[in-house]
Image 1 (cartoon, rainbow, N blue to C red):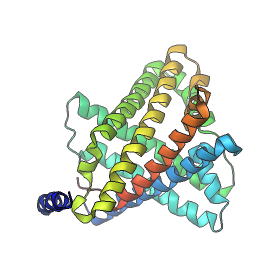
Image 2 (cartoon, rainbow, N blue to C red):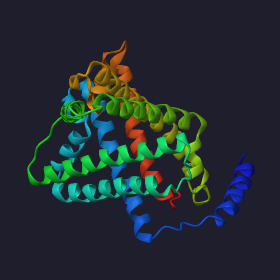
Image 3 (tube, rainbow, N blue to C red):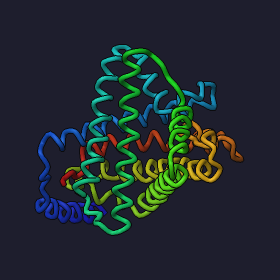
Length: 284
């Protein structure tokens, strides 16, 4: 087995020698720092969500709640400032992927759906960046559901508002289902610099990634379902953010157990993103 791993690693390393990151260094730095910041936020969200059934206030399971928790730590403002830059960097990287297609998604229907999802994700992380900046100015926190309900109400008031929310909901569900497929088939490993990892690191990335990406996919799919309900009922109160999705998990049979599993998965997703910040191949 050890010999097989060494031979496979040599093969991957030979392939990697053909690969070059052609992006400007500052773009690569932004992308990696963005992945690092995103990972840190998800680790905090996962830890807080695990604590929720055991007495921690549920509001702290949101992304804003995670930022609020970070703000309360020593040098919290400095940490928030670093995270704000990182989250903005990640959002910019999503826009770069939407425009320049570094992952070669193509220009067919599937490719355009991927580009739309990149732009939606960019908007989400710019929103998180704004929340971090606002928290540095004045310590305030609101649930993700409250923010998304306000936003969805504004969208519903526009012409074709229900159609727009339906599309966004479908994108969320699509991203969630693809995440589950991605985890099951381990396609995420194809984007990693395997030749730079030893066997223990590789196994850690694989198993952490499978668990974390699966949990992330489940949460995204739940949010997407509620967005579709918002569109069909024309009721912004049907919109759920991350906190609402976790609350729905908790309402199911054996909800506490399910919530802890999903929460640990979100923390694992954050840990995987920390690996990804170092080992992911990035090039437009």
